[in-house]
Image (cartoon, rainbow, N blue to C red; front, top):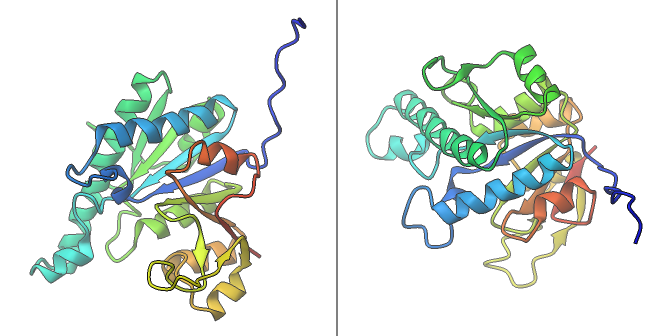
Length: 246
């Protein structure tokens, strides 16, 4: 038997922004805002790619706890509701940090809203340094401004951090020409250009986030997080989900 160490397969993406919606933390049952087994499974996937040498930034939503748009329907002022949603992302970010740290993955949380007792303020150069030192960086509190989604946060941070790609983890396996739940004949795209996605009005991200990715040449991969080793397969460049690119 050879004593040579196993050679790791080459990475297609060295630095990524992994965009997680708050809803994915609910798990399949959906009873608790943060399902412990789902949180564990997500962090296992993050740990797996981190150990492969991928530089990982996480952007987490807060829809499992509070969503600003839904708050407006309940009589909460939209601006106030958006700030409540930003605070929800902090709760989710701390949950991810705690689980990753317990797995031995050194993690830093950076918040767009100053809250020094629980997170660092977002400082671009410091975030870059964390990645260079092999730490996972979790960005919370959105952009720090109301009326901007966490999709926009992911697009903004990916542009600032010079990420190779945004990986948008969802509960579906990619982008279809129409809703596959309503239309059995819906066709899934393996890849599509930004221009074609705009022409077909495909809901990849909100318009602000999409424009940022288009202007800054940041590709977007939409994939199903629940598939085994999905993130690993994505960073290795395997055919998974739908790639939106220039």
